[in-house]
Amino acid sequence: MSLKELLSSSPQYESDVQKIQELVDDLYHYRNHFFEIEDSSLMPRKANLLHEKMEKTILDLDNLAVKTKGNPSLKAKTLYERGRALNVEEEYNSESEKLLAKAVKLDPSIIDAWNHLGECYWKKGDLNNAKICFEGALNQEENKISLKYLSIVLRQTKDPENRIRCIEEGLSVARKAVSLDTLDGSSWLVLGNAYLTYFFTISQNPRILKQAMSAYKQAEKDVVTRTNSELHYNKAIVLKYKEEYTSALDSFFSCHCLGSHMGCTRKLKAKRFQNLVDAIEPDTQLGPFLKNLNAGSHSPMVHLKQGYFSDLVEGSNLGIVVLGKVICSVVCEDSVPFTFCIVDKKSNIIVVNLYNLSPGKGVIIGDSVAIADPFFTKIEANHDGK
Image (cartoon, rainbow, N blue to C red; front, side, top):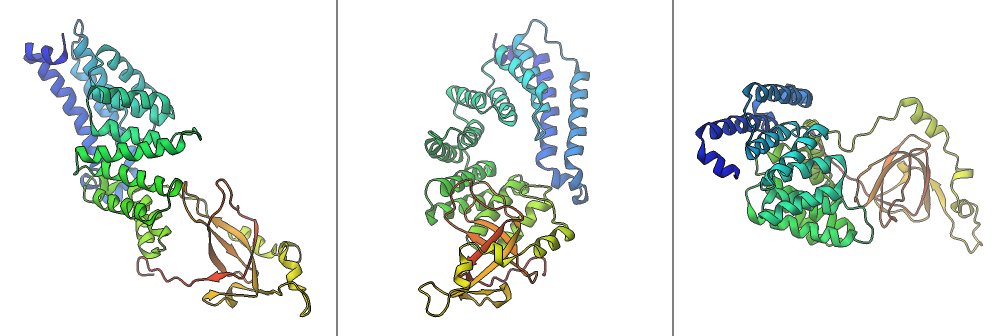
């Protein structure tokens, strides 16, 4: 007997299932509308408060004591709802995986159970099984949740041979998810991320970046997605690439205010900073440019003069070489350009954008960087009145 037939044959079963679903729906409403329900001062405690709410929901489910013996479809539904409740947090929950796996085994027709099980596998890092779950759900019924997660899984594939194909397929799947519900901000966010990955991996066409930003703007119209830190972080990445730094700072700040630690690193201690400044030695760290410093007027070599960051003028600085130590870098997957900060012997700091860098290459804190004929741009950015 199917769950639908079971519910229609007994009002008691329908009442039990409705109570269970309402409890878990209330839990997810609390998570998705946290910033509307709670005071903003409680933002740092969101994860803890959600965990407490989840534990209370599990106790309430236990207190219902729904009798499922002899009713596999009802048993599957109760297992699914309990597994869904445990899956409400960002972290992987092994008990949730077990319950959801049992639910789909008892009743493979519960598409939402397949989606939550796929999400569990995704959180676990098991992309293959996650993909199987989402594709299995889509074989039964086309739905936006399966499509959204399938897009994410495809874009995260580690197989270098199929990387391009998977990114293209992930973009196509994300478009389909949006077409099913054009008001769903989460679908627009996934589409924006798909465009962003496509841009940095396959084709750096400005039109693709524009489409990503357009998708993010659509996502912001949804009150739930608007409070998703990932939306503001990825939007900031686009703005940073376009060198719209004031807007990028605003988006990064919004991401931070929503409790995200995406892209956060430790601060460089003052003593470590001074040690890096003291360690700058032109005689040993200018590399091949050292010969240019010593080139005479009759030498065929181009003569360079060592300068400091304060000597630079806007535009091209021909005939000058500057030297500094790396004090930080901006770590972001699929981000172009590679951005880092360097300090010179006078403790002045500049930001360096490095383009056309090979994948996996970069600099780390403490590296020496010499730049000949640097192109310098002064950028004014305002944030929070500063």
